[in-house]
Length: 257
Ligand SMILES: Nc1ncnc2c1ncn2[C@@H]1O[C@H](COP(=O)(O)OP(=O)(O)OP(=O)(O)O)[C@@H](O)[C@H]1O
Ligand SMILES: [Mg+2]
Image (cartoon, rainbow, N blue to C red; front, side, top):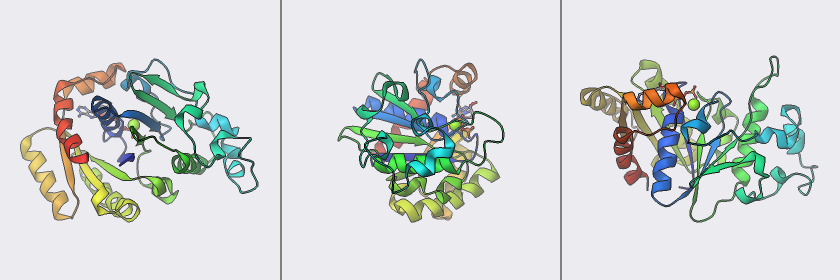
């Protein structure tokens, strides 16, 4: 359970859940590495209580156009740290990793200009980085995935151990969760694929959604209620702190660990 990915529909709360997971794992004694694999997460560093964003790893390969060439067989591992067989977080140059109180963040890449082309190179870089990322006994990596399912097509999950699928109370989110569940179970196995409910307004809705997901053979690891403190932190770009959400999340951590 060393590399955990958080995926789901756009806006369902992937980054919020990734931040709750990062804080919770840190509280339980793990050194946490958050991998921002989504180019639409400009505020993730703030949610995690970090002062600044790291430079995207894409810079280490000379931009999107060089990703495939960098990982081609002819490339020389002594020339680029990202092509080493094993990458330890300590090996990364300082501008590519930021840290506070046991939580570190790396970022794969961001779209910088229009007409840059598709996001495939970023998916490839995520996949290669996660494959080579070598974690110590007390380290975990939490990957905040891009919305939707394309990352499965790009093989980003090939070295992931567990997948958390965030489900908000909407038809679209439930439909997408079913697709993701099938793809994730094929990569990491049924036992390591969970759904987590988020932004749920009442116990009644939790029960209804839990019922529906379980009827479709999806395991539900927990439910995080709609929380005005979380909403407010996200609105103001503040570190995510909420007693209620953290308490809801304790049960998720108990099961996950
Ligand atoms: N438990 C919660 N309670 C209240 N509001 C929440 C909760 N979780 C998420 N939100 C709201 O939903 C918004 C989207 O959350 P978040 O940024 O985590 O989603 P995301 O899935 O990462 O989005 P994206 O696909 O854009 O990366 C937040 O800005 C916040 O307003
Ligand atoms: Mg996000």
